Image (cartoon, rainbow, N blue to C red):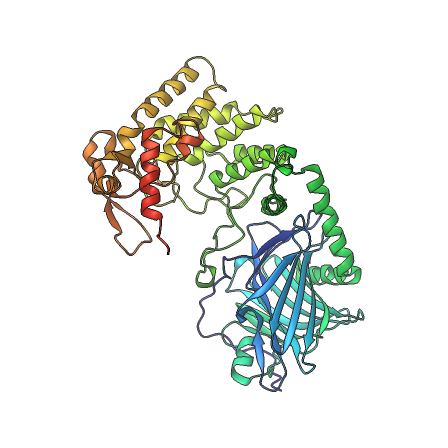
Length: 564
């Protein structure tokens, strides 16, 4: 045993997040403000007290016999995840190894900011589970501190940074405190994984770690309940954790399920869907509704993040990732909420958008929930989407008394001044004239005109007609090699340079395809669109329009792969 008080500092740091390939996301619909994710069979990022603030990188397990054998669960080839009820995001994860089976049930306490993990190890009696948690309080990988300590006579693992505290506590199947041998370290140098990697067993017993990217570790009983508590201090987090453990996993899970069942009862599957869809499709509908609701914040009602993940998280240290608000994604989520009858939530989306509209009428490319910008681009469609949401809610008689005229006026003014060119397309890469963006802008002008009066309404409709009439002139190419290859007159392109407004030859200009190593520079006319179908969705072109039919043929031909 190496019992040294302070863990050695990491000499090199490259803090990353977890995989974006999430297998489950969840939250409790109660007083708690905690969201969790899973991936590769373990808990990945946990968010608190807002859905845009991750507090850990991951929480996983090592199974070991103390004699040299050890297996990290997330590296096993596969795990099984089940939801006992598609309405309730309470995952049951099962890991199988020739020497053991490990089962994990996860839920958030509906009354406290605590994540509960009920675990059971079966198989070889010599084996024990070990906890490994990488803290990332406040998204900060530089200034976290970790401790081994006791709180009111009970063993805990603590981490703290700034205004956030974290506590890990455990009780065994008999209800007694059960964090056994414990240690804290710095990720990449003195954490539990490094201990096993170097020694084949748990040798280190560091009592304090940081400031830096800290990891908390402990040997656990073969069966028990683990609590990850969060709060405004480490002591507050420990109080939350032990309160949840005192109540017990089964009781918290029952309350968790009650909250979700009540929400689904208020928003049942529409009868015309339920009666026509097979059971598997109905379950998918319900699960999709659950996922939408999970992504909603509770500090800022109506704010839904794009995803509880960081793209390529295992190689990225991005502070933002996808747990940010894009007005485009937010309105599309609101459209789904309207379709399932959750008009109250959709209306909250609209009021949130009204509050975050910029002075000149546009919306930020993306933002933190409180309205602070993250990426700085301007995408014209993101100004059109909130106008379409206002129109949709009015169509469903769900606008109530929300005042939208000022928002619509400012949004349309921005579209008129900036369009039809966008600073970035919806893929957040290139500027120019894009079929999808133009479809949204035209639709917003038409729908928004109904909220205006007099000359302003007439102006919006006239401009919409003009852009609609010129759409093919700006975004459709003819007589190219691709057109000849697929025997069509032409097709919609991905984007054309802004110069296309004054000269058709701009379609032959190179457009850089960012993040692509192969052929990054291609003429605009050789980059086939796949989002032109928005023209059909918004009624600007019919599905059998020759331009649409030809473009679908080219798109399918370029994308398809012939299989035996």
